[in-house]
Amino acid sequence: MRRRTGLTGSTALILAACLAPASALALFNDTVEVYASATYNYDSNVFRISDRLDSLGTINSSQRHDTFFTTAIGVNADIPVSLQRFQLLAAWYDARYRTFEDLDHRGHSLRGAWLWAITPRITGEISYNRSEALASFANIQGRRPDLVTTQMALANGAWMVTPSWRAHAETTAARTEHADLRAINNIEYASVEGGVSYVTAQENRVGLAVRAERGRSPDELLVQGIPFRNEYRQLGVGLQGRWVVTGHSRFDGRVHYTKREYDEFTNRNYSGPTFGITYTWTPTGKITVATIVARDVAPLEELQSSFVLVTGVTVRPDWAISDKLNLRGNLAYAIWDYRGDQTLGFNFEHRVRTAGLELVWRPALRVAVTGAVTHERRTSTLPNADYDVNTATVGARIGF
View 1 (cartoon, rainbow, N blue to C red):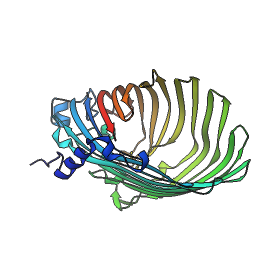
View 2: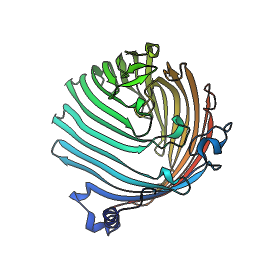
View 3: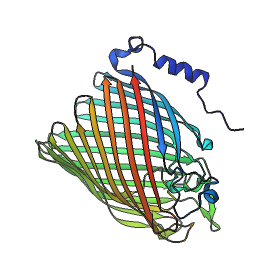
View 4: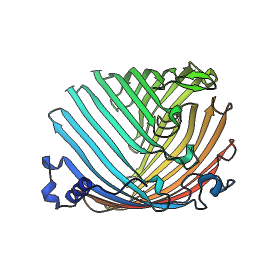
């Protein structure tokens, strides 16, 4: 029998409360918002299967597309107390598929943060984030749903030692766990960073930062008969800063030299540049275009048993057509370089092209209606790892 995935009685009561009159839920002078949302989704290739493969033999179905409905409830709180600020963001969602019912699942996203300040010149953040969501099938390409749980704790601080000199430090600890047979990709890591920057009167900034990281799998596994903990050490040193070119354009970014060394399967070791540079252009008060060029290690929730280097460029225009209507775009091209994959025994590369549009309409202060379409195409040097997919969503959100 398939597990029950509809709203429970208590969840239904919460959703009913979210739809109560707004005046009954106004809390802390509008510093707390309760909201509910619903989204209808279409996906033309749910499992990201190559056109070269037979669907029936790969996913036990002649159909590749599906529609699914997602409902969510949440709360956002941002409460200032003197120089301090306390934030809470929490959301719970339920996703139900029309055809592939084995993908029905529930997930959540939680964030609690204390934005602390001793004086206006000495500030920082202590936060905790946790999420549970269905992993993308781009790295599975099969009918194996994988709920991924990610947790991250962070503490940082910055001190304007003088009006021209700023020092900062940060430490993080994170853990990612996969629910299906991909336990080999479970990872936990801790990092520390410190740096100093020179700040000009125009708010331009340039500085030096050093970051050290150590990670490993929480469980010992056997890979090719070798005990595998996926342990690594990483060190990065480089420059970071901001340059306000004019009142309409700004550069933000960092350029580091990064070195990562593994204890097992050392053919995954990497040393070379990593960077992330964002150019923000605001030609008018209603148009913003952000261009991001980056080269970095794959995100924590993606595959981590290989060393994956992601290099790409993204362009994100945003046009405020009116006070209530926004049109947003997304164009991206990325190269995913998988180095030293110990399960396959060779390196491979994915190239991903993405194009999308989103329309956001806000008929009232806390009401939003959205529609989005996206096309994604991946080519690969790995046999049958290519795919094409089109997605579309229509959703509504109401807050109180």
